[in-house]
Length: 156
Image (cartoon, rainbow, N blue to C red; front, top):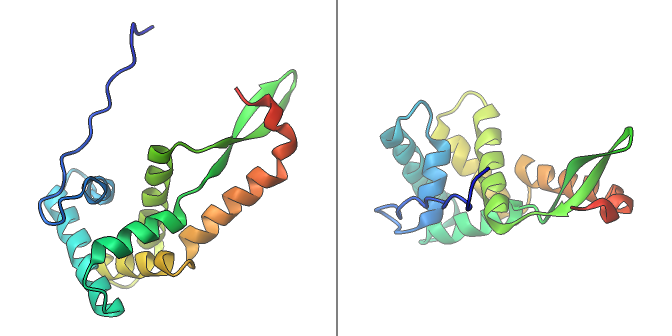
């Protein structure tokens, strides 16, 4: 067992928007270690977002979209006796951001027939407006937690 908790290594802020969130999102979109490709996808999807919304600041749209998708509660399995209960727990901010980014990326990847930059921009725009698959996933997660709040006393 460790003597102390391992330090988290934060990625340095991205060069264009000077934001750690965007840097994390680029790392999240990255596939097979191709970071420059991921950077091109994210930056060009931000440009598509700017064109579609007439908003000059794409970073504002991105942060609002993440905020709309970020779950506040989730369920974790907890075994008590012979039964397994889905126990609702609060999601820490960094895990919430990671889940939101992952959901947006995954639902953008599932769409077919268009370039990734357009799919990602569409998913971010839908999340910004409070609609789309990623927001539905967040709502489903919250419903699951709400349905199992009787087991919240089993939290650890």
